[in-house]
Image (cartoon, rainbow, N blue to C red):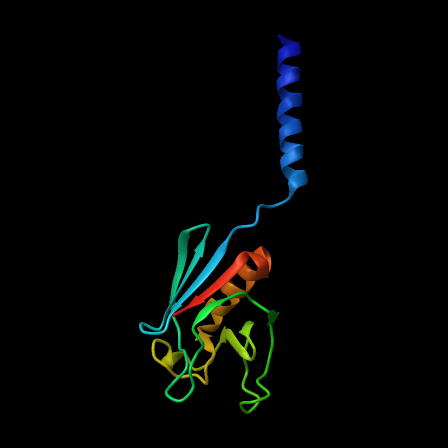
Length: 144
């Protein structure tokens, strides 16, 4: 009886060690931005986890449509083009366009930016951490 228990414990320990050696699984993150409704839905492995209001480009300043991947990220960034405006938790996805936090939270839910996708700062921080944890290659940004 003791021999069987020892074998089971040894087997369980081996399974656990091999799972730990593989490291964490990378989830597929999909960020869907709907410019018509000014909303962002964030899914992980097909399950929607977040649904937030955003602000995209106002009249004369379009937000690009298409499918993108994060190109680079910056926790603290200031716009060189628009008056040194703060862009916390910036995720750049197409040339100078980024998803980032904003202090202008009363305008979320309507077009207000120069083309970037603005989020509440706490939502931007959560998205930034999620993309950082799962990687740019495993993150897809869809804008329509």
